[in-house]
Amino acid sequence: MKIAPIFLLFVSPLLSFAQDKPNILWITCEDLHPMLGVYGDELVQTPTLDALAAEGQLYENAFATAPVCLPARSAIITGVYATSLGTQNLRSETQVPEHIIGFPKFLREAEYYCTNNAKEDYGFTDPTIWDDSSENGHWRNRPDADQPFFSVFNIGTTHQSRIFGDDAFFKKRFGSLLERIERTNPKDVELFPFYPDTPEIRKYVARYYDLAAMMDIQVSQLLMQLEEDGLTENTIVFFYADHGIGLPRGKRALHDTGMQVPLIIRMPEQYREQYGFEASARIDDMVSLIDMPATVLHLAGLEIPDYMEGESIFADDFEGDRVLFGASDRVDEGFEFSRSARNQEFLYIRNYLPYLPLIQPNHYSDQSEISQALKSALKSAKVTPLQASLIATPRPAEELYDVVNDPLQINNLASKSEYAEQLLEMRWVVQKWQIETCDTGLFPEARVNRISQTQAPYDYMRSDEAPALAPIISLLNRQLAVDTPIRPEFAPVDSHLKKYWYLISLASVDSNELSEHKEHIGKFLNDEAPLVRIEAAKLLIQIGATEHVDVLVEALQSDNPQVLLYAARVYELLGDQVATTRDEVLSITKALIEKTKDQWQGHDLYASWALIEAFKAWGIDLDPKR
Image (tube, rainbow, N blue to C red):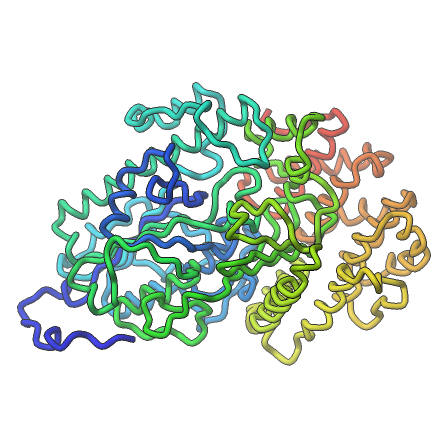
């Protein structure tokens, strides 16, 4: 940490406490990649943020740790990867170790007044993090006007759901705020090349530009309040998004569209020399949002806990030329398990479930008009191979992109011999990170939740009880071994966990070859672990042994909500292969819909969504919202 200039040691005691310690204001928005004028987007209207960047520093290479809100926010509030904590699966509350706390508590101990307005979504509950976490949270409510503050304002205007609905609903939702901007002409939008060019898609992408413009107005209102209170000259302002854009192949995806975020920091002149801050600078350091807690503690003059996996971007020893990591896991009913590494030259993505498409069926997202328009367009014979790849199966188990020459990550270089060295290096970097941070994603969610009933998964993964992760990763690497494909003799017998991942690896095998494993897979149908039984039944059903659908029907009646969800998703994806059980599962589904009525989250709710979609494909609409 840098030493304060000597003159600061002789500051008059008459100066206020707030001037001794900087105030810190976080303005965050949701679901937005660097879609600002100052980042080079000539269509978007963001004059406030463009001006903020002119007064501060703009970060060219800032990235989230996950492409969806909860795991991204879990890392932002703790400085620990969600995959380390076990908070990576959406809306799955997890026990967190006592020594890992929401970092604002350190600020509160140092007499900061800490407010959050108002979204949390951390994957765990701790009511002691904030002085006030509500829609009324504001620095203006602090009891002493000289007390330093840390205030967070979360602007939800750019969330993916805000483009939902017809034109009348959109206008009604935003009212006068929409009237304050110039509406974006869909004809002026430059579509991502992975989108088919249709009027409907253009319309809803144009709406996203409108959301960004309205969000910019809301940022200006907060900065005006800061100015009105005479606090601009002793408040450090951060602006960032929690993850990338809330459009298909953005949110939920580990490509830059889902992971890269805008990050702007404005620092008052009195603090600049101390932290080597240069106004109007564009910084190309690799910065992760997991660095934000350590950075704030550093700016407040506090010690950074050893457990934090990020670092202060203003520290003397901060290394900007480094690798950043990302993770994508279950969102609603859509299971995922992908990990990524990103440096200034390459992006590497390891897809451990390559038999699933990049854009999976998702009851919540598929309500949106842009998702419907996109999926309709992708059925056309006119789509390009790139566009078709959005929903194609299987997808590559590995992806490697030259981000300098291919910023949208269009050309996968993983199979190119001239990039073999980079591929192996990035693969090793990701797997080393997974082992060092004790990636809980290598455990099925049902097991993580079971562990969390008695202890924090973070602690369990670092205990002598936890199995070694390297053998599991080696088993999964059979997906990549073209010369030594997975064979029955590789099947583990000593671990439910290894059995599960062995079957997952088999899911990537060609169906003709998979038939050769039929007898061997059948041995797993009576395993003690329900997910092992489900995976075995799924593989057998896929090669025609549909009599094993009874394993799924049994799991759909499980009291374990994680097992229920897993079975429901498998049932949905198998489609007509499980049609013989429609009547039996229809009654199960109706009961589940009734049970989850008026819920907004939960594994049983997501299970009902999966089953609703299964029946919708058969022409039976059970959606209670219709």
